[in-house]
Length: 492
Image 1 (cartoon, rainbow, N blue to C red):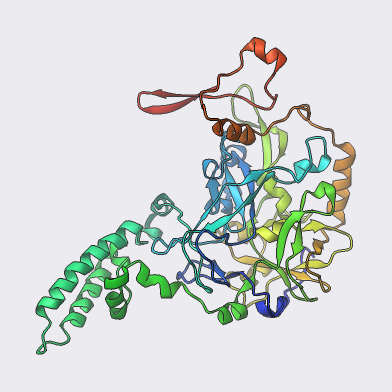
Image 2: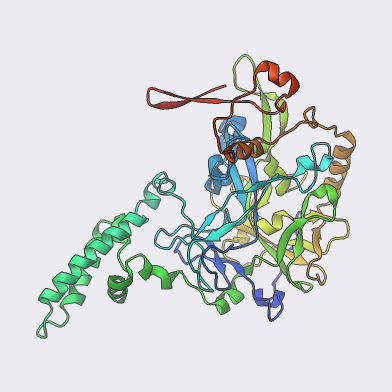
C-alpha cells in the first residue's frame, strides 16, 4: 500500500519533554468553517518568529502548461502567493510561489491580524550547479513568519490575505468583515452609546439591551461585511466601547494549551538544517525527544488527481502554445509529494517541517493516515477512487509522520521513500550532467538584491564590448519596464 493505516498518537504534550512546551500547534481554527489553523503554545512577544522557517517552491506558469484543463484543477491555487510577495519575481517571469508551512497554514481574521511573512533567502545548502542533488529541492528557504503584536499562549495566528482574496470568491465570502468595517462599527458604537445615555433611565433600565437586540436583528435581515463586524454579544458590545470592535473578538481566537495538547498536533517537533546526506540539501532534525510511536510532524495534504498536471512543455514555435510532444521537465513541487507508480494521484503535505524529511533505507519514522477524529481528515475518502477526488475542490485528507523508534534531540529524521523512488534516483544520478550554465550561473534574486543595496540605483548596464571581458551570466535576461498610456509594459 501507499501508506500505512491510521494510528492513534499520544497527546501533543507526550511527544515532548516536560519542560519543553510545544511552540506551535495545528488544530481546528476558531473561525467557523475555516478548517485548520495554527496556534502558539507559548507567549510570543511582538517581532518574534512564529515557527521554524519555511521553504518557498516556484510553480512556473501552471495555467499555460496544463492549458487550464478541468482534469488538472489544482488546490495550490488557494494556498499560493504572488511571486513579488516572496521576492521571486526576478527568477520567474510568469508563475506563483508555494510557501510550504506557515505560508499555507494560517487563516485571515481582519480583526486580529497578528503576524506576517518575511522574505526568503536563496541558496542550496552548499551545493552548486555541478552537484546532481541541486535540482531536487528549492533554493528559496528560511522564510519566517514574524509576529506583529504580542500573542498569548493559545492564540491563533492570523495573517492578512488582502481584501481581493475574499472579493474574488463571490457570495461565499461576501460577508467577511474587513478592517475598515470594524472601524465603521467603532464609529457606530459611539453614536449608540450617546443614544443609550440619553434615553436609558431608571424607569426604562433595559433600554440599551433592547436597542442592541434591534441592531442585531436588523444586521441579520441583510447580511453585510459591516454587520458581521458588530460585537457578537451584548457584553462584547460593552467591551468594544472601550477596546474597539476588532479587539472585542480576541477571546474568540483563543484555545487553552490543555485543549491544544489534547486536540492539536505539534508542528515543531522537528526543525530544518543541512542534511547529513550532502546531496539531499536540507533535512529535518528532532528539536526534542520523540518517543517511539510519537508524532514527528502532522501532514495535511493537498490532493492532485492527475500527476500529469506536473508536466512542463516546450513551446510550439508555430502556434506559441505548449507542445505536448516535447516535455521540458516537471514542476518542482512534484519532489515534495507522495505518489505511486500505478496511480495518477499525488498527495502533497503542506506543513514545512515534513517537507525537509529525507529518504533512508534505515528510517526512524514512517507515514500513516491520521486517525478518524482528526480535523479535516475524511476517512471515508480512503474508500473512494481518483474520480471522486477530482470532484473535491477542498482539502480532506491528512497524514502523520510517526517515529518508529525513539528519536534523540538533534537526530536527523528519515522515512523510506520506497524502492521505486530509490531506483529512479540512482538512474537520475547516473545520467545527470551539469547544465551548460553551471560555471557562471547567478540567481536573478541574488543579483537584484545586490543592485538594490547600492547607494546609487542607477547602475549602468554593461555595453556589448564590456560584456566581452565581463559577461553577464548566461541564465539571465534583462527587461525594461516602460510606462505607456498609463499602463506598465515589459519589453525584453
